[in-house]
Length: 343
Image 1 (cartoon, rainbow, N blue to C red):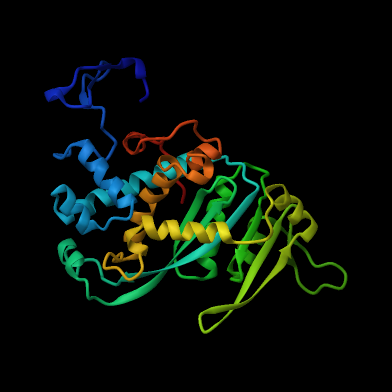
Image 2: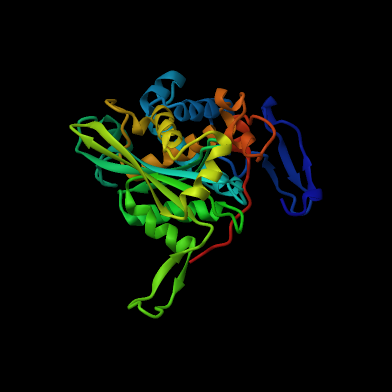
């Protein structure tokens, strides 16, 4: 708060866990949960936190409602509020990062198509036999710390690839140009050029102006050929940069050009986002619902979930963003500063 010295505690109303605060400047009393998803809820903060944690662990909305004795429509409302809050939390915490590698990938999911206004939220949940359509969740991770850097929901085209690359570039410290490794999808090539390249006017012997990658940009692809759903060959190619420089980056870790880390992360996402599960009846009903599920999963995975491969540290700890494992209620109580409005 601005004028923090004017804020004083006024006890715990009804013996609750959260304090009532008093502003001496304006004389207003308010709960310390103001500005969070717990404010003016008739359910306890612990119950809401546990419900969001269950959603972040991949439990479906109906199952969460049964576990906590809450209507599914209420769980949906909590999910929407948590998604909005944790989107701001993720944007605030994922800033000025220094990573040397990035592995983007796209993950296919199935959603049930429905139009806003045609069905109520309860009818939407009940409509398990509705029309299905596909959507892609684009993700990007740092394979060293396993930190989930960004995601984008949409189709498998250049537009979503551009949005993902833009989010990754915005999260990195100025001057940082990591090594990018993707699968054979060429949608990331132009977005990488536009963010880590320069526009060069035509010179002698050239007809058109074109984008030229910066010398620091290193980008490789792992191209897999499939026949009857089986991989028959795997090849690796350098799109931008040099193989020598890429090996210099990978050799200290004992790695070669691969996408194994982001592919393993895809399995984690399917386990923690109910809408991405396979052969389940917990599919998301729209891209917006899928995005609302992804924001809590992202914050939970990065800050609250220790990994055995990281010596029981969270990805945020491995990246140096924090020195401890966060509890989910701390994440939900965190108030990120407002961002400047952009057109």
